[in-house]
Amino acid sequence: MPLVSLLRRRDLVALALGLAAVAVVATAWGFELIGGFTPCRLCLEQRLPYYFGAPLALLAFASDRFRLPEILPRLMLVALAGLFAWGLWVGAFQAGAEWGWWPGPADCSGTRLDAMPSAGDLLANLNKVKAVDCTKPQIRILGLSFAGWNVIASLGLIAVALFAAWKGEGRR
Image (tube, rainbow, N blue to C red; front, top):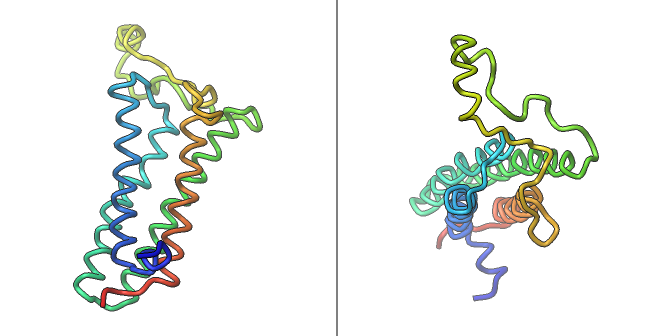
């Protein structure tokens, strides 16, 4: 079956988008847990669209499979594209800060001081806290940081979700 024909199957695209969201998050967790990379605040925020997107994609898949009104899976695919656009924006912001094109957020590393009950707790935690600067990439793979790769992944997922929402057909 040609790729364009598969992309027209809204249910299969929704399932693929859900699996892609899980794969992206699993990759991020793999780099963190196996590779020893510590995510910054923006890195963690870039995961949120995938956390919300995976179940939404599965709902879109199910709504097509159960032949609910056609508008529902289409709207869910558009919402998925919106979630992935959020991830793209955060990734592009972080990648730009990493390249020095603009400043990163001032609160991007360390522990919040107002979250500590006392100064003694702050001093006790100084040796435990590993601050991660959002403006310094921990690694570049083929010239791109994790944020840069998230931009590329998000662009692809947005394009596929919008194509399926616009041109996709339900299960026959």
